[in-house]
Length: 120
Image (cartoon, rainbow, N blue to C red; front, side):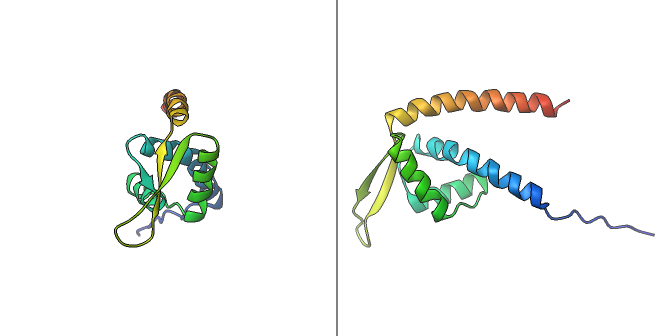
């Protein structure tokens, strides 16, 4: 007799947890992407998807970008395109760079602590 174990789809609890982790790390991810180069909104969504396999909706991204801009962490500028409508490009501001350095140190400490806890 053979038994087939089928791994269940993520539980509602796990799905909610994943959503919270995603929300909690999205700012960190965006600032890290912007430290390397400027991006326009849709391109940021593509970069996030490519590097993290996370799906980020425009309705999530643009309010977050506006909040980061209002907080002085990023700047934005409109850039005319050869064809089509202008695009709004986002860049890391000096305050964003300083904040990102602090966030990076916190992230490394947290990552080490989690590794220590999960390895036992």
